[in-house]
Image (cartoon, rainbow, N blue to C red):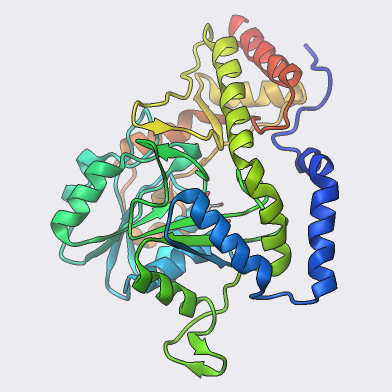
Length: 371
Ligand SMILES: Cc1ncc(COP(=O)(O)O)c(C=O)c1O
């Protein structure tokens, strides 16, 4: 059974072609101004994205990983501290914790939402716990109220990893604005992506926000006067100019992702796949359309043979990665995350994918399970 054409997991050229005149003009504006780091575009984008989120302020940084790293450091996380997050996240969440010299502590996920199970959170807290990093994975909000309540009770900071959830809602409020700091990635394939690396930290706490601002720029308040030890992690002007073109399209892109997810739902509902489920508190922005699939590896192979690219997000949970052997977390100790890693696969979904392509992917999946 053959599809019409190859169906890639993501095709960035479609988005660029649609926005080319505006993107090219924005880049030309930066070139003409010849000011490339910490300038007008960055300042305006920080205001615009913070306003979109409903946060008091926002700071453009070098990547999502650095957003998390700087947020942790701004919250005072240091060597010997523990930071709680989930085992099924993208490893960069954990990289940030490691580079803040803290120990990641992993709490298992809810098998329906793939986000932190708040019922398992409190037992992971010790007197060394300094922060909790819930991850709004695949575009769906983590269950924030119980997490915030537990954090408040124990006097622990909350840093949201919203790298996959630009514009997602938790009880009608945008994710990233619930915790002490909210972190975003603008990696090109994200719902709001630039043309390189980029990241963002938003906050309603002026003191924390100022600390992130200092940390991203060598710790200097005034040029060559350094009040704290800092880093170099800044969103450059080219990326900020591109993001300013793309931000006004974010909601339309997210709406389209939701429509296309519904289309998949309808076409796949008679297969044995477990489809993504939106829970009542969350409005997902479907960064990814993740299903659980019986005979998953065979299905992936069948789709690949027929020109459809799929990806597993993520095939190995953090605690089973070679790099994190030192956490000494035994296999089987985080069963939901481990089971998900064996069963999940992400199907192609992005605003510019055509309905014909989705129909073709779904037809192949229906065919696979009928035979
Ligand atoms: C959940 C999550 N956290 C953190 C990151 C790190 O973002 P970046 O790739 O911009 O460093 C990513 C992106 O890959 C992510 O998906």
